[in-house]
Image (cartoon, rainbow, N blue to C red):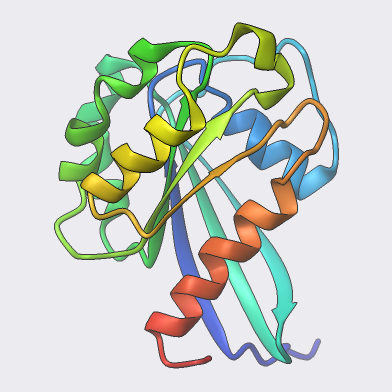
Length: 174
């Protein structure tokens, strides 16, 4: 069996409060599926996606962290060696933004963190304006803000390409 040469391997952590759509985002990206009823993540889930960006072969190691308070104690150990992060919140639940600073503080290094508002398919239930979320991301020095829907697939590929490109730039690959 032959090993495939990769230009880089990045550890990407997806984090945020419970029920915001982290697992749905990951499954939509990896398997192109959306499931209405997903079981709560216990601790963390792990997957690998191989992709090519601008002629570079990348292994993206995706860590999907449980958002419930009782699992937060595990997070500092899991984030060690992370190359980037996706902080997710639900645009229909303002409370899902309340713990942003706590989540970000778990990362000791200055990795790029992309803030992602989920569930844009529920725009009529939106409680956080896009402009407000963009301001919050900028105020926290997060490198960008995007919105997506795992249900419809809107912007899913773009979210992962955006954070992967930023990790590549910071690693000197682009």
